[in-house]
Length: 124
Image (cartoon, rainbow, N blue to C red; front, side):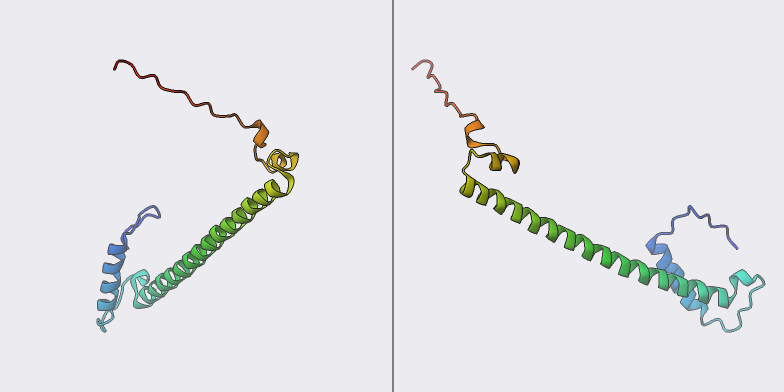
């Protein structure tokens, strides 16, 4: 059996070529392996294991994507509600209240006022 290390990465393109070879191998009715590791039964088991692993990876990835989408939606919904709470608190308690500050907002009275600086026109 050719030595394939566990660290060897097999590309999808190579796997596709291997699958094509496996299907072509199916037409070789007189094939008899000297090494049982290369027998028709071993190839069938390896192919079914590959297909099962692919199916598991696809369904697991789909579930992970769905979970990530649900998490994103939950974060967005929660954020929207908290923003609404902050707006309601400003309206209910006033923009300079301690309650507004407790929500992590700056009191209006604590905000620095912007000072406009007039630019001088030099020369004429």
